[in-house]
Image (cartoon, rainbow, N blue to C red; front, side):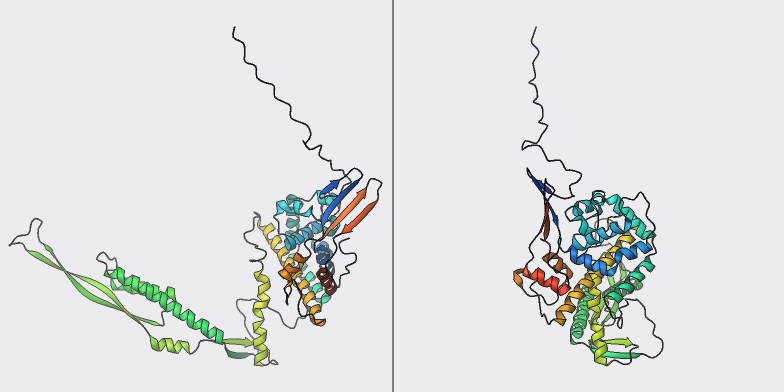
Length: 441
């Protein structure tokens, strides 16, 4: 009988890692990366600029105001709603990780700087943070924002003599002034925009003329041609500067009366068709009249005690104010939002508003102190280049490499080491009024 082929026995997989058994995490170990030795263990956490942000949030009393307006938490809740929202707010300021990556991001930071206990840090995930957003949506949002902003105005001494209200329509009652200004830059832009519109209209009219001259044109009625011309001028915005005339002319054509080869007795039928053409030109008189208003713009104000120049400078601050909101589309990239429920999207946008508020307060504190101490610039840019108007983003980047290392021995002795601060970091902390000796501890 033929012998059955014997398969070689498979070697059992090793139950341990080839480099040795992986160290098991103890329940007493803090979250985050741990390096363990024979008699000591080292845990490292990122500190970054969290102490700076925590100081601003503490002055804002954000957690206190949240607790006053959020619905009461269920006793079974592992992460209080206020703490979960503040952790998500810090994530928006530092990293802007998606919700499913929030726990992994938070594990790199010291739990106490995030306002969480080690147990709460272990339970941080996207489901719990999503429920925190639900609770924020259920709160009285307008009252919460009003209470928070009112306290911020008093705590940070924010002046309210000038407010920016981005409204679509404004109605003035009582006495007001209508002021006219001329801008050289706006005059150049107006002339350039007008030239572009005229050039675009001429190009479209030339294409329409080619269609009219085609033997298979579909423009057989004058009303249809006039409508096409009107649409071209309207889309280009040049209806006031180009004069167009629709010309009508007859086109004769001949064909045999009957089919077959033509002979000396063949009769032909004459057919006359109506065709259209365009004649257009730039109305130089209208363009010159329009150019007289280049660079002019009006301002309406009910402030009667300011000069024309002071009102103009107040108006010129508008782009600076709106630049803060433009960061939602640039720095924060708030769209698209990968959340399905509208309630969570609305709550997340509320946190983005708080992130912009924190950024504005940090920049305001730093720049005002620089002005009081006549500090012209700070070497925040690469290669130590000076920065006259420091931003919160540059400030956070400067402290990005600051870490806390906890060295713990088996005898219970613990030693905490923090990355030594640079001269620039110490100067920034001094300007912000934060002690540098115990920073990150």
